[in-house]
View 1 (cartoon, rainbow, N blue to C red):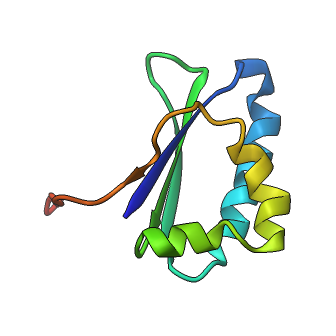
View 2: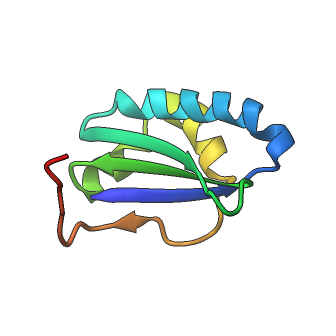
Length: 98
């Protein structure tokens, strides 16, 4: 299961936001069921940033948001996200040999 969280961050604020984002990912990565995380910036709209998280299942993701350290570090950042659905179940996967 994966989560895609988007943020609108002015370019002048992105350096500070990136530090907070890294701290949030670090604390989430220590939670049971965490698989991987990626961050990115939209190539057509540089103020649009994305956080892609992968967890074993939806329960793992929801439980990962509960510990105090996550509420202190990650939740304030996540509350700045664009208000839209974020959790996706995987339907298929395509891999290349490259």
